[in-house]
Length: 341
Image (tube, rainbow, N blue to C red; front, side, top):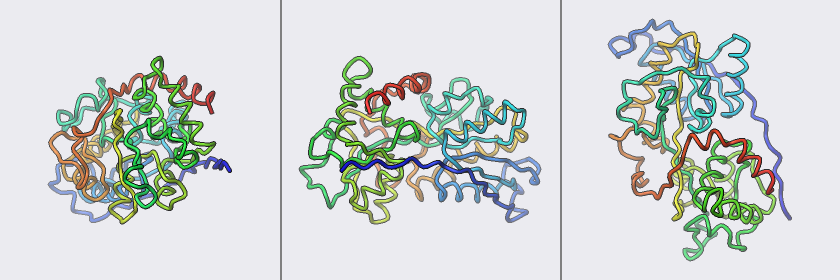
């Protein structure tokens, strides 16, 4: 029987990180008043977010207030705040770059001191956002439920009738990473005019009415065996694998994308200097390596290595994913998606 999961409404919540280890901010390269406070809006997962903020506070002496929710909810909140002349946010941290690009008028230019180490296709030419971690979207599968002969090697393999109702995929209208997956499959399988939508219509039939509330459910429910295959992000699956989960990753042979999570300074924010410091910290070598080694988040910087156990980004078959097109045509693509459900 087809299952239809009800969509979850993500509630906003505030977590205040208190200033710690006063005195540690001396000689750290952060010249600004340690009594300063910045507010960061982020859709990032709790553990990597908390680890980065803790380190930043200890090295900079700047207190960080975090507002955590989904990408769409937070961007809408910033829009409303700016419309009402009531800016509360200094930095938007996380979320796929296409979502940030689609709302680039909310942000102001800043050129990080690490800008030259970030690939050109992972930052805004006008410097309103910069990538902080590329995030390949992949096919995950349960190694206990699939034999080696059954492993899906590409997007086309998901159309096999034996997988009907056994593929976990989040609703692209409510999940930024699921939209990236949708647009990736559309382009990898022929694009708007070359068979991409025909492929997606067949995939929808094989989903058998199942759409999840968010992408994290995709790997969690594959791990438990409720689904056999999940469409998700590499970092989440690798973290689960490192924790002992019976999961494995397949990089689709037709090609996938590695859209970066992005970070940006909010236009008209109250503490731009603190915001600049935070961005430079996130792109700094120490934080990039910490995110890689502890949380399987690939460094955006060309001079740093991928997380242990993951292939170099150059070894993954990647399509030419146009962030600008993905952002300006998002509403149109989602409208077409709704029409085939």
